Image 1 (spheres, rainbow, N blue to C red):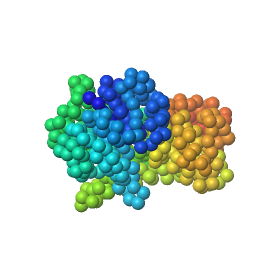
Image 2: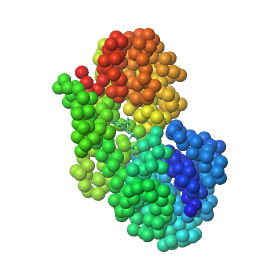
Image 3: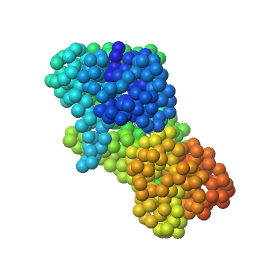
Length: 437
Ligand code: UDX
């Protein structure tokens, strides 16, 4: 079976390389010429562990190629996977559907023989039904051009693993043919016991957004407990551990700290609320407004703690920010809590120096007003306070004595509860974290 993957961003490039690895002939398509050139040369335009090896293997084996031409993709493939982005619209929290819409508009007129189109992008519930109708309208193949929706659940940094070993495959369709094609794509995984759930289009769309809403809620829940813990003299880390032993609650996504960012959770909960509003069920999701507000408050609280530590005023101080990516093992800075905090602290008069193992180029481009250092050792030199805002292994494993020799004052705010407070305090540091005394 020959597959086209439309959109070669984080999701599309990973999907294309993984399907080639599984033995399919894959053509990746993007409207961005520069990105296609990079991929053709075997380079991944973002940091994702393990992806470059797969890309190179696919290219070398002749199973993976790239194009910017929709007619070529239509001619080449029997199944087309839509993997384009659905960013947040500037004017509202709603999802911007221009890229998914244009993928269908540009592909459909070239579908002259039977074809299956499967969306993987995260879309507001109801989008797929509209696109299915539009596809039938535009495709010369008419009823023989069918659309299903199969959301992805990849975590950045684990994209390859999550694609090759997913915890479930969900497909929204009422077409036997669409189901057969998607089963064939993931036959290996289904044979290995991965649950394959077939639903209607709307349920499939909802699975994705509700999963992300649940994860965001879980993080904000523990961060709300962090607020209460600070006020009441309790310790949120011990609290989270004690909660995690109840297997109805579980310990995953119960990590208190600076909260969630990235290209998915923040925009997905906002788009979900906007869609609920359109559907007339706004109160059903009004709790997500609180989830978002708790998350934003974590950033403000981190800044307050740092300000307290340096004596109440940032002006003229040297602040080191460790971390720029929204989470470790990624160079993605979309809605990064770390950079949001860094920029605010700089606007309050501090000289801010940022270091991140992977996200420096992106950070520098988006936040030129901040200072950047090439290594952690350079970044901490002369700091009045160090803020650990993304929990890269390099920071978790840093030795307090070594860093202590370079800084002006041994003060640290552990925004991710990533360090051992006893160890750092024993080395003479004033250590502060969210949700702890
Ligand atoms: C998320 C979903 O996990 C994934 O299934 C979906 O397909 C896309 O959105 P991702 O954005 O890659 O994936 O990041 P994730 O690992 O979920 O982390 C999201 C944010 O939550 C990060 O900023 C992380 O630092 C934060 N987080 C995570 C916490 O603050 N505490 C936790 O306990 C876990």
